[in-house]
Image (cartoon, rainbow, N blue to C red):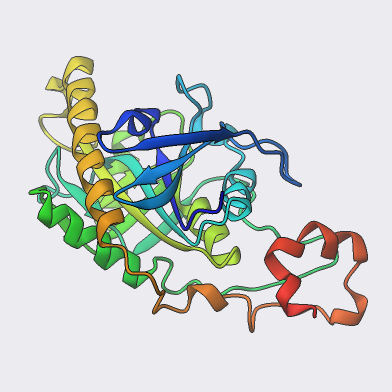
Length: 286
């Protein structure tokens, strides 16, 4: 079964109202196994594929995620658009717990994570000035509004390494930079989705204020878990609305992101690398 819409998030989305599960697909990619099986089915009359980013039961830390396998697996099942749901901390007073933010920029504070499919004799440099698909972000924003959820369109997601949260000095530094939210996963997904010519947007769900906030120390684990549960409920509403509103045609440039990005002379690209990347680059080597 081919599906055009991919959802990356928590495993709770699999049981969302209206989702009809058809199958679970366990895939092996050239970069190893994804975080979990892809749960493929129908939502709002459209084919979708869900992937639990950290594996069901939350088994994988942000630094352990096989980002390449996760995104490549989405390509393998025919996904052209990815809605990525992610719990984040707020770096601005205006982004309150239970609010959603749809960032349009990223800042990378990770260390040594692999975030490209290319290499091994084949070089490509994608354009990444605007890392989020504008058409998909608009769909997600309108879906949040329709679901009655406070959501800001635009902002910057700071991607940190983790798994420990920020020090107070770091949190204050990021606020000084003008960052909006802080998380540990979405930048690598966005880069790889662009290389795979898949539209990508982040739906950042605020669980609490980061440690810069005066009330941070008063927040308990129970408070955060309660917010996580409520955010998961709201995320299900937004996903269902977004899928229902998804236009058939893509009006963005994401589907041709590699058209001017491959630098290596086609005649010298290694056959083994070309074969490995055929799903991504085959149309450019005809």
